[in-house]
Length: 269
Length: 269
Image 1: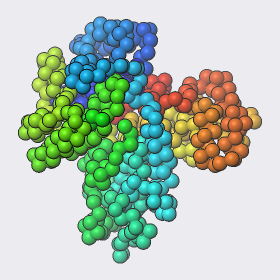
Image 2 (image 1 turned 120 degrees about the vertical axis):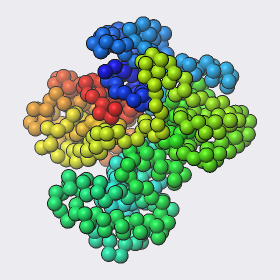
Image 3 (image 1 turned 120 degrees about the horizontal axis):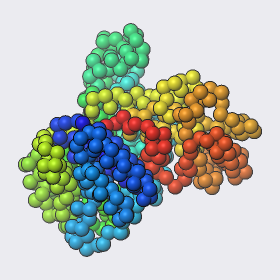
Image 4 (image 1 turned 90 degrees about the vertical axis):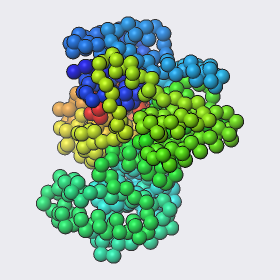
């Protein structure tokens, strides 16, 4: 199996996203290696040794995705026995020309602290935790979005991802068994109806997840899961609450759909 | 201010990371717009209209970063009154040639559910929440890493980010006032010493954060913050616990450093 390396003088997240987007187009498997914080000549030489060893071991030149701006380090990485892809390089010159502004590369820009965005995100994480699972129903004024759904339909990971990735404040409120007989939007949520977004999930998947948590319980039974999902989906439709079925989607996709549907700004940038 | 658009038929995360990495090299501000889930001709035409309007409104051609693989949609986007950067395109052909495998582009590959990785991540989020703030000291067998530090030094956001982004199981344990007189690694942590990673933070920043939470408290006082930080840093050094000061780092940087330092695999890919 061919090795792929993602390297930078910072987190290497940009190199990873870039390399992974490209490699996911190829119908084959790769070994993935990330080398972050390569900031000195010595560290660059260490990285080179790892890359050269991988090329030798696998019998095929490794693929190296990098974003170095420092010339000395770049030369070392570019001299590896490997296929080198420096994706910033190819685009900087055309953009400079087209917008008439010279780039002024600094290390660690992309995933370092931006003014404001950091506080937004930490504040949003604290908000999501304090307003998880209906724990603080008096605090919905501050919410950017309120996720609702049955237990284990994906509310908590989605709320946390919205906070960490986008600085968006997401509360979440569960509909539980006791609510089901005559399911309605609770009084305290009514005034925030425009912020409500519903999650649902396939019954079989929900049964699996609940069974992992409480084996052979009523909570995890087919009958209970199907009834709860039927009721919440009926409510979403009746009240025209936008919703998605999370079964086949990653947390990135679920949250991107929530942002798009609710017209929410991403505070991160 | 010139407008920048990040567009794709999926989450648009790849386009955002790519465009943002490039634009952060330029010493100027941009308006940022993300348009995700552009999956139909109609949606592409809507996006085109938005882009053309932005170019007109700002008086300068917008920058458009995209990753479309569908030809019909791509042609529409490429025909906007804007500067178009399709970064996958420039790299696919060279990689195909160099590794001798044809790319087989599918929509929604990069940030959609990968086998295994999804469950890892949700499991890791549940683990991080169940083991937040020392709430479950009997469950450290399963941890990939145990973050320690004083209250508000960044343990919880870091644990959650490790879980959501990398599928890494991070517990976190706080050192509190009562521990300070004779600060030691607690008995139940000793057997997991190799998993311990310490966080610290500048006293002034800690005072700010704590004061926001509990104004004018002993907890937020200069004396208390300085004492707690002095004691934990002394412990880290004495016990050779790897640690970082989180003050100037984003959660991406903190977690990337933790992964690098602890030699942890990223489960996401």
